[in-house]
Image 1 (cartoon, rainbow, N blue to C red):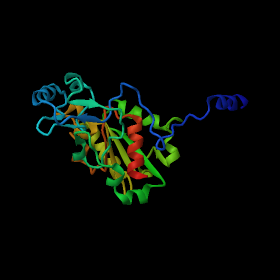
Image 2 (image 1 turned 60 degrees about the vertical axis):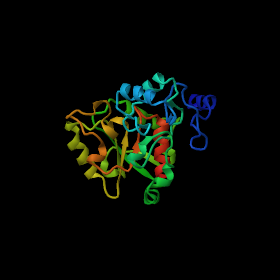
Image 3 (image 1 turned 135 degrees about the vertical axis):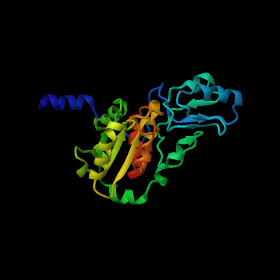
Image 4 (image 1 turned 135 degrees about the horizontal axis):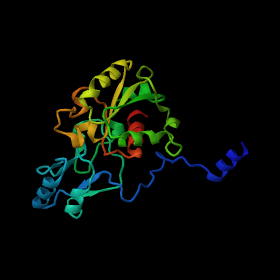
Length: 247
């Protein structure tokens, strides 16, 4: 027992101060893309053709973060003269079409459904469903339970049963084999309930887009309330989305 107290005293307070203070992320982290609208069209075309996810709209000069896997190819090819990825991790949206951006995103807190804040503002219980995910998005959701992020301090928890939850958090491209299980889990959640799409695979199919084995976008089979882009989304991206939308 004394050794536990000793370790606690030596380690000090380890929980991050977010959202009161915005912590710095790793230098190589790629967050919100900033797109220069005055970039030469030939440079835009080169980046659009090289994009493995077809995430660049060459006419609007915008990037679809719902398709983007944040690989940095466009940033590298344009030498940051067309696209530059910033360290801003607050990139979630309440509407899918807002993910097509040049770097400007609406305030998530203002676009959230206010009755959700009234219903779930004090307590939010979520059931996570891995619908054929690679475990990257799942891992970055799991770390929210660690002392550094401490999701529970905000009254948000992941539970074992959908019958005990207020909504589902879906990761993965929703394979054909997981579709029925996902729909049954959704039906088991009592009303009112929320649906959260986490990761590029869940939002648009990601690298598996075009395959007959997956559902290209969770919103095609369920009413999605919150979109959290990334491949995978940073834990702070997940945390910001949950706090801004529900708290």
